[in-house]
Length: 224
Image 1 (tube, rainbow, N blue to C red):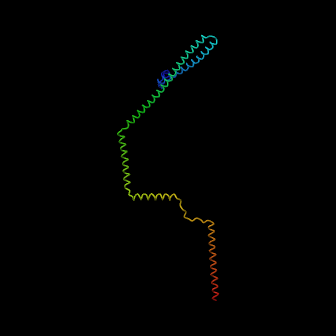
Image 2 (cartoon, rainbow, N blue to C red):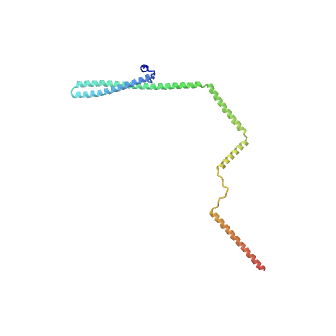
Image 3 (cartoon, one colour):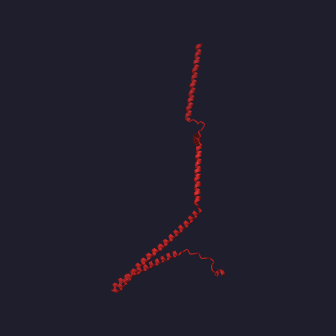
């Protein structure tokens, strides 16, 4: 029961609407009211003009003149309303732009505070020390490179170049395909030509042997 009738323990969240926002809202509401007032005045002016015209048609000139005076006065009010409307719109725009400037300044303020914290963390002497150590390290490395370069003689340089050329040649041999060691089979036409040539040589040899046998037989007959 106490929880039902007692006050809520939850705190109301703070409103995000600032006084600046309220002022801009009020200006815009007043602007809208002036626009509605202008529409009513314009409608009344048109009605007065029509009534004055109707009175002239009816011969009521005094009444028409009175309506035109009223119309003239309302036109002056309409002109004043236009000026006030311009002032309100200009003021509302200035307030909105001022709010944007405030946000920009607040962002710059926070950025400067963060930058100041970073500067406080960095000591000028420590930065100079780091830069000097870096510079000394670079100079020392350059001295080591110079010493290693001076140790090598011209003969050493030539050996290095020769070894480099040998490595390049070995790399090229690895990339080239291996040449087959076995002989390739002869083409059919070439084999047939070789067979004909061997057969001609055999016939020529047989003919030479036969001639020699005949000559030997004749020689034996003559001697007998």
